Amino acid sequence: MFDRFDRKINYLRISVTDRCNLRCVYCMPEEGVTLLDHKEILTFDEIVDVAKSAVRKGVDKIRITGGEPLVRKGIVDLVKMIGGIEGIKDFSMTTNAILLSKYADDLAKVGLHRVNISLDTLDPEKFKQITRGGDIQKVFEGIEAAKRAGLNPIKINCVIQDNKHEPDAKEVAKFCEEKGLFIRYITEMDLEKGEFSVVDGGSGGDCGSCNRIRLTANGLIKPCLFSDISYSVRELGIDRAIDMAVGNKPQTGHENHTGKFYNIGG
Image (cartoon, rainbow, N blue to C red; front, side):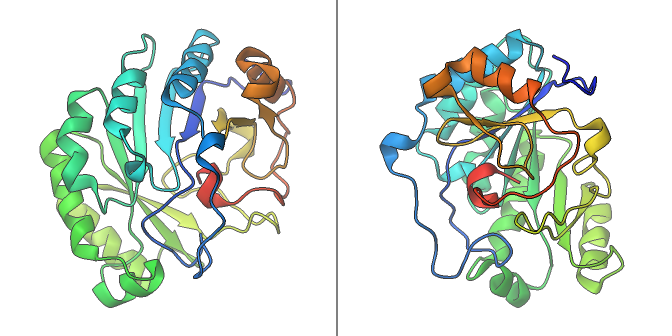
């Protein structure tokens, strides 16, 4: 698939839930959020049908996101269903790793290739503050479990305020070097203000070469994280929703006033 700016669209990010077991300060308000009703959430069969259609149209890279995807009941079964689709060359998941030690082996066995893990600091108390209660030891355990399971390369998503020379970012970088992990620095973003930048160590935020579309947990195909444009697979049908999203993908991101990171997937 090519959009009207001749960008090849071959990457689908699938948000499988708007729920999360953390409350990170840059993602969710402390009091939590109004969650989608269960009947609004796509079933596994619906998600797989979208993935199959996207692959037929040229998508060969899929990433599972959330919320936190590992809190979705039966997530290993869903990964197995998607992993069985012929034509997927890169199949990954973004996770906070709190539950990863429990699922890493099974995810690898059913076809997941690799994981991206969120980690902004090595300080247990600061981690607890950022995530509002998270246990950093569980993240470390999840990383080791992913390594043992062969979910490589393991990429670490480190959110920064200004630059990668901040003390916490430097400590995370040192940790990654010691553990054989790959760090990606992500400057804190603001959807409503349209504040974003290119990921240092990745391709996110580079509008000129953007190759992705997104599926939200409630069935909307979004051509851009920083846009209010979306097309419902339930209302329009999967193929038409994908075609409209690709056909109307904006040249650059602007602002998003109708979605949040926790329900689109960053």
